[in-house]
Amino acid sequence: MSRQRVIDEPAYVLHRYDWSESSLILEVFTRHHGRMALVARGAKKPSSGFRPVLLPMQGLRLSFGGEGEIRSLKGAQWRGGHVMPTGQALLSGYYLNELIMRLLARDDPHPALFDTYAAVVQLLATPAADVLNPALRAFELRLLREVGWLPALDRETASLMPLDPGADYVLVPEAGLRLAQADEAACLSGSQWLTLSSAMGEQAGFAQTLQAVMPLGAPLKRQLRTLLHYHCGISMLKTRQLMHDLQTLAYPDRS
Image (tube, rainbow, N blue to C red; front, side, top):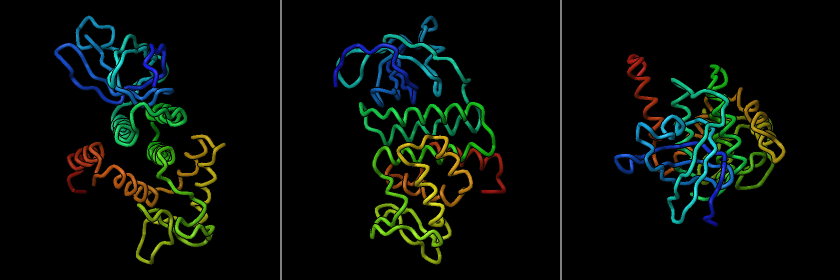
């Protein structure tokens, strides 16, 4: 990949690490260059212009350059728009960031997924109770498709036979989409999977995917969570564990 200076690249900060007493290492998601690592020299100094800008889930325009795996941040500007999410929506945003960091290789552009991320973060900034979880499911689906781990949703994976709209199917790691067994509660009907398939087509945008997942609730959530944990190689993401711990503190009788 060319290491020339890049100017005004649309980006979001995914995570930040201390690099020295005054500097930070940033994990960023950019539209045209994918996930990248940048060093922000002097960003921790009180006088630094980077301090109020390099915040998670804020649309930025970054300028950077240099050689090596970690490039140098030269400039950062807020693109304007929504405010930073808060509360549960903020934790949900950190969850999206963790997925991107775990599943996307560095320097691998995914402009369509970047646009999906931007749309979800905007929804998180003005959350509604009936949109938050569907927005996460829609992002998970589109992320899995981008990295090649989402099978065709209009047919059984092993047999390539078209789905029966009246039968129930489950999405499982390695086996893909298959007929549900009698004791599998987390399943969707063939008709529901076919609707999702249409909403994930090449011409379908994020809004169509969001609309399709809204009525699917817990069964889709469980199947996607199992698939994501399998590909991440862990039993629970750090942000999911944090959400669970906070809910246990707030509602101890539900634990």
